[in-house]
Figure (cartoon, one colour):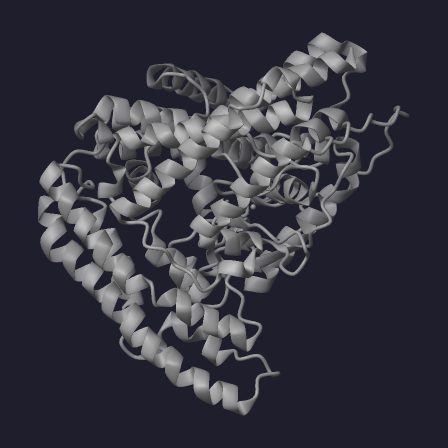
Length: 600
């Protein structure tokens, strides 16, 4: 799921089968609003955060800063942020946590964690690597500028705001080059394998002819309400901006990376090879998991989960009647025509919509609340489909933009229903009840401070998405063993990430060994494994979040089921989990333990 810019009925029936009568799920207690002095601190913090991070504000639907693109590549910017975090941590500590309400204590703990974590990051010079092939402002700007993202293009003012925002990019690009150069001198550089990918991405966007640029999209789709004079004024301004503020700086970035940076990029795969390598990765693992678990503990968990899931895959494979080993099964699923039934893009999208229709009757048994935010299934735009994964883009709380489940469909004829992940699993994770429920219910909960309504932690968000996949049997899916195997394939993929991410960054695995390990343990092509491994090389620790979060949520559910016995209600558990929004797992466990105590 991207939070910036940040998820066919195969068998009939099942989900709506008659169930024994049950008592209604006790609703989670609505959170009381914060006390006035604390609420004022939270409000000022959120407002200042949106001023400092205007792209995130746009994604949230706060359009006050749509014309701004601050240069976050300067020492002055880093100093400003450090003072900002220090100031609000000090303000927070003026409150006696023990005297706060339960909900205020959770808010206190989340904000304290967030501020302490960000301040701790200043011990490392990660700013010397301004972007990579996975997280990159140039790529984010392209999605915004194409008119298909969060940047609005509904009014003449919207168009002018975007031109204002775009004017900040050339300076940003030149500052990024300066920081890359400082990294070259300090030995803080990207792995050599990643740089050509970045160059290709940049060159694809450095289109000299404005009319052929992705950034020309809003001009091609002027609203019908625009006057001819507005179109006549805006069109040459966009053409000039694309030449000056897009094509030229993108070209400079690509040329620099290819001719100057690539020769000095490093041969090593992990950040363990950089100065402060071990500490740098330990911090990244803490950020990714929001726990204090060590890389070695995470690695051992990954190995154990791979073994467990392999055993389950062998059992389900037997249900399909397939006689070969797992590697042969993976090849069978990837090549047999029965798993590629589609002829058109619409058929693929309709198949996902049919999965939604199939699980809907079972949702009330698991959830006491459903989002008000609209939901749509769409094909990923052609310009980014080749390098995109299926993803969820959040909607806005005011309903002006729905939550969107994007599916890249390069060729409907090759779209695999039971691949990795299978269609049912993919929908449960990225759409419903995965990211759409988690993000929308959080944003719609107006009793939460804004930093909780719109904030997020990957370990919670992606942990919930992976946990949501496990609800498949309770929602009437995975009855087809091929879909069940696809679900297990998705789960083992996340378990492999624990092994590979830690292995890469602690020197246990080289890039080539990591690619081979993934291919040996799941249904993935060499190209797919390479893209995954290079993602982990670019963003250390992020891939640890999925499995870590899922294991924690599943652990809590099992604990309370045993602890509460007949008093345990799954709907109430889910309500409590989602009502509070995304939070560090350490805070989540404390909050959920208090909930369980109240049930007794």
